[in-house]
View 1 (spheres, one colour):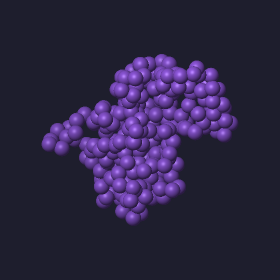
View 2 (tube, rainbow, N blue to C red):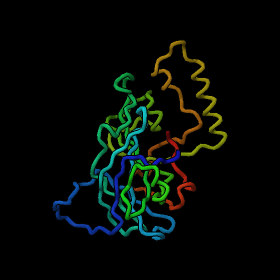
View 3 (tube, rainbow, N blue to C red):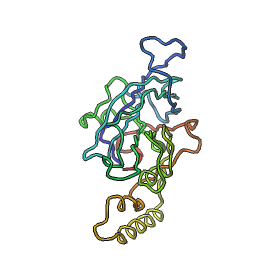
Length: 242
């Protein structure tokens, strides 16, 4: 997937945040989950960086995104712990039921983990995206499921299983050429077998083709250390789930 810089972001401060039990006016709430990570590459060249989660609603006719702030703890930029204290809004979730048209489908938020120039506000403006994007975690994304995923749904296919409601750290699985060809064949066979006048539910019930990376729940959960690799935007290994 090629990022366009248009994402819901969870912006992380680029400085060390001291741990404290005191809850003052800046307290964002107890974390609902934490993302632990390490940055590979030079995060200091050309200025520091901040880390951001971008929640991307791609199921609409035209992607939409939103922005919230969150604290970071740890020695940054070498390592970081991201406190997720706020969930994406309803508008930030992918509604795989398409307004209730598809039964038993879920509302799912998907967030990519990126690094951005510390002194520049994270923006959806494509004209500044390539100049300020510094890195991406290509092997993991964060997912929020608004309700339990039901078996036999597109939501289950997309997420690699019937996930429970809540936050999940997901692993990005890239297919080999052989696996891509097999997935393409299975997808086409399913589509060709659909009856005339097939429904959206029947179409989305077919397996995904080989174009897309697969998402599965990270076996280690949020204890997994995410690797955020620095590099030029054109050279980054973006997750390709849409």
